[in-house]
Length: 425
Ligand SMILES: Cc1cc2nc3c(=O)[nH]c(=O)nc-3n(C[C@H](O)[C@H](O)[C@H](O)COP(=O)(O)OP(=O)(O)OC[C@H]3O[C@@H](n4cnc5c(N)ncnc54)[C@H](O)[C@@H]3O)c2cc1C
Image (cartoon, rainbow, N blue to C red; front, side):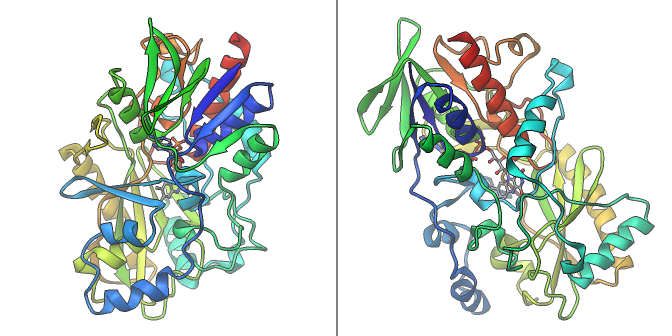
């Protein structure tokens, strides 16, 4: 039984590993090239920033192609990884169970979460290595009754050099990413093709027969799309199939303050977080805003302090067959962001971080919701409108935005989908 898995991120790598170790002949098609961290980013970019040469975020993609950025509206940048490991190679290594909207459709992923957490190995980052300002903000959040907790992380602290640049790739291999699962899949016999962007799915008489890539057909008995919330929707639409206009992104907005010599970049991002109904707050020096957001330009990287809001946004946004994305920040999102930013400011003030407090750029990198599961799909883990033999195993399946890290959720969904495939076939 030949299976094609499209994409190697949190979903694709998990699905490929599970299917390959269960006797499937697995072909993995990845649009990007093999990932390499961008070690020289800071020395290269900081001087350009100082003389005002960094015009906008598209420069990052030019310097560092694995980090794909798209403006889905004037004021919203979406980010994803196009490379082996997908967006997980750009992640901060935060590993939290995100389950919004699952109970409502009767989906319990507890066994899958348990198994993946055991596989990855998750711990908090040692508190003695938190920056003093980060500790002070943690204490301030405690005093304000916000119940901060150390973030569960897939970071091996003995290998971590506290460069703060998880999002440009971990240069020491301290932070887990889905290439670990991809390696397992290849070890179990899967064949990986990089620089292989799938254009569409081949369907004959209502059944999937393979995929089209660079105008060439690759045949298979089943196809598993795991190209992420944007990639999967694009392939579906290019194949004449629908995808839902429910794209969500977990919008990030970082409040920037100032503290001389804080050196917040000398620790991994987001070592603690406070959890609220539809957002989290977490210490975070937002490098995107540091480099490209004009109002942040007057403060050096050593003196900048950031506290992030990550909001579960309204699930509304469209992906088109040509890859264009339309998604704006809704009024309701703005109102909830303002409230959360107010909390962030209180924490910073109490921790002795001074103003001016300036908001960063709105961005989002948790891309889901374009093939949302409904209650009636949970038994099969396959939306009923997908043709026979076509499956989805990525964050597209998650119906609700989370405002929380989404790797565990994606991997758990993909594991459950893969087990349904194995059961069925
Ligand atoms: C900067 C950043 C930081 C993040 N930090 C965290 C964190 O700390 N913790 C956390 O839990 N989550 C984090 N996330 C979110 C998390 O990485 C994603 O939610 C998760 O990886 C989604 O998995 P996925 O499989 O749906 O998509 P992805 O991981 O994005 O994988 C999609 C894959 O499909 C490939 N692809 C796309 N189109 C095609 C095509 N046409 N043909 C073939 N291949 C294709 C891509 O190259 C990629 O390999 C972060 C995201 C970003 C962008």
